[in-house]
Image: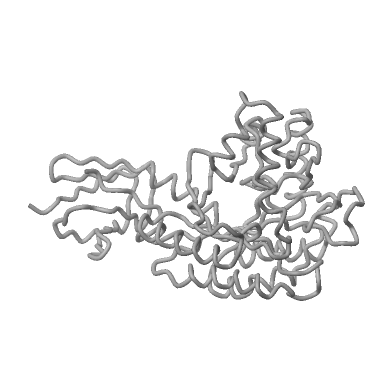
Length: 377
């Protein structure tokens, strides 16, 4: 059997933090209150930035600006722009993702802006390009990845994201594939969305946990990144559900060395955008998830760009096995490339091995430089 490629250097588990809804209204102190310790511990945060947030009745908008219908462009918040640029270019502790355009929601179709195909394709493409330019103006760097508001992304708009050269990050479940199907009628999709929404209708928004923060497993494909979760054993959106989900994610990631992402929303910890954290139970839940992942052995603190680029390099490495002979040839230079093997290998100064996990690490791969290893008889 050919050795199994592992993404993380030295077989480490990639851990990403993604926070949604940074916008014109975001105050640097809000991000600092949630992530100061995260940054001190060497983790990075990928911020999903809304280029031109619309004032509507949504928790991502401060109370005084809800239902104004106006759009608020992120470059107009000068203090936030200065803060983000420092974090991007000096600290290198954040990564910028594009989070839709205006974070709009269509009440008639019950779809978020990039799941709703009622708007003409040319208009959607124009808005998305405007969003890219707005982010570049604010952050002095263009977005490489795209996150759709509400995790709602139609097949049509996904193709548009590809055309614009961005890489979509999206949820991949049976329900999402159902919503993206071009063969199913609009009425059936709307009915399904209402049924799913009804699940949360009896629970107050301020009491929900998993809607705003949870760990998920990531998969990296050709020009896409997707996420999913195991089936949650509890039937409620509660701290107990979060604990069970976190345990399942950790077991899977430790076993398979798969990437883990914490999805978060900074504003969910501030009741009506209070000046300090007021949702203390929710903040305790956030700390529980982060601490649980931080305590894992062999964690690789990573951004989406770092994860995507390394995955591409590792996947492009050729591995062949003939009898007891294993041949490895890389197309690019990579350090600390790890594989899981089933048999012991002959000693070789170019590799190290973890006896407990059967993970071997090749210290360095050089393009077109063949490495040959042998299994023990």
